[in-house]
Length: 198
Image (cartoon, rainbow, N blue to C red; front, side):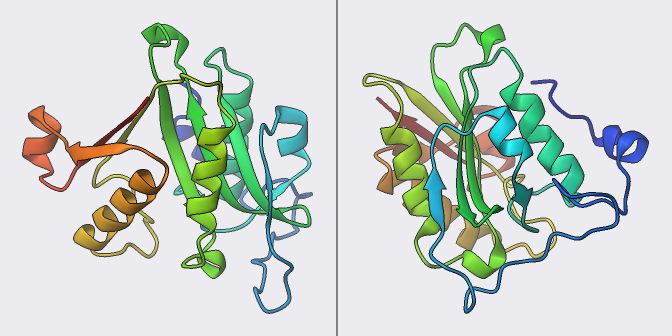
């Protein structure tokens, strides 16, 4: 949707700066043993997001500053972007992003990203985030979600079948009807999924 280009990382990002932090300061992962239960913030706007720090591994863009900037660009776009974040203090340990792209006539709200920091996975946080995000949308909202090989943790990827199984359970748990993806995408990636809701 034009919010980010891979070359932006090379041209504009200070590699010593962490997302939402002054240059030279790192955003540390939250140790679950020391952390309180994450709090889910629905309808996060750009000023709120700008005050938060993104934990490593939440979004697939490895550079935290670029990932943080991508969400702000999305929130400032004309695409009716909605963001929900799971936070511990001011650190984002989980996020879900959806949009109704203006260039596509806004027929369906598209689920674009759902991620949780590695230290907070396998505890139901992604399920809770997605359910609350969907529930916060106006009644009658139609949703779509496409999950392919590209939706993965590029640093520590799970086996493809495991990842597809997790995606299916998450979507079905939030009320999506999930089928195998048809057409060229399905031919290229037999485990690709197509989810619809509403």
